[in-house]
Length: 549
Image (cartoon, rainbow, N blue to C red):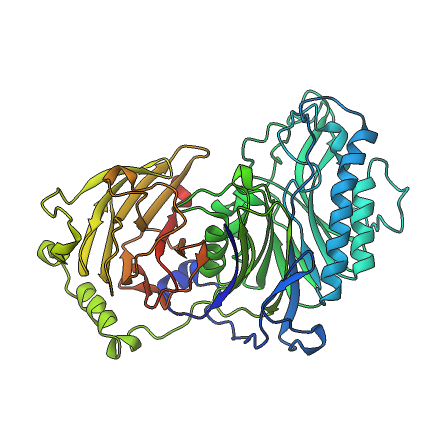
């Protein structure tokens, strides 16, 4: 399945007290002016483009041009074997050759910054020892000023840094890439590993003249035995002449407060560069889902470059703003993919007046009436109008349990053409007010989870999710599916205890959709949508309670 897309536009409502408690959190972009992108999308993949190309010379003053490259890396055939530095460089140079081609392709389209994925140069599945020949020495950019392209002999074992620096210089653009780095340490350092060196998963940033601007060392490692966790969290913000301040972090970091959420407490950080090697996990954590949800929740632009290995479930990159996305997801093609798009310098965050649409939208008016009703009415919640022609056995117990994302969700089936449902777990109650223009022979369910996720990482999640099940049995709810036919018009909401809620809306064929309305109302976070472009796969509110990790 291949999906390259563009979509935009929604209305959202703020939660005033959240802005008081958190300088950014969900409402970080609430006061940012809109910079309309009047040109169409340009997406390039090895010379093939989709949409309309906006020539660089026609870009508005309130825009810049960004590029991300989803790279199919050339991997070491035996990553556990010990090889020489020369052999490691031979492999890495093959990947760097591709990078250089993409830099020049992006330069032709006017790109001012390009982002490459995590693990794109050296690969993965190394041991601490076997990765050593692939590591560059990394001097601190805060202590020395250095242009590796112009001063190639200043430090040993910096061949990769030199090539990347020359690419930035040649392409006249900021360049962000990921590589393995090494840093000697002394035995008197209590954190120094036994082999006398630190090894880090590192993002590096070069300016358009090839100067080393900064580096970020990944904090939240994901089963990466080859690398060390830095003793202190890097909070890296770099400045650009074309768009102001950018933050930077890597892959798994996106799910944690440090450094991702903390970086965005700085209201001047309106853009994030995000190298990742993300394995998709539906129905809630596909790469493009979490990327777009993060950009929307924090009101920022996210430039996300994923690795491309479909056989490992690794694809999904994009240039995401709160109101629109240019994205790519492809489980079929073996080739890499370049996205080049105009980006607003001041992204529009979450805006709106609280009850305005309730006067004109009957469904929203009903939603507001339910919230205003006070104590919850069980009768109202079970008000589901069924069409007997569907063949559903409505005498089946309403609540059931199924594994989703390795967590035990509590769910209720979504039957009939319209209704109002509620399902609760621990302190979180999720509600759904829905209408279905037509019924499909598919099973949908509304699920809730409020607890500690403990598989492939430990972190506390509050989630409300309307999902299409893998089949017609309750035990299929939570399975990974990408195609659906069911059309919905709905309000989805929950009484979240965290301000960090990531909205996700995905339809058939891995298509990102934009909510019509989004935000806080009476201490409930809600998402509404009418007019889906295709069948609903997932509509979710994914909350992170960082302090309970």
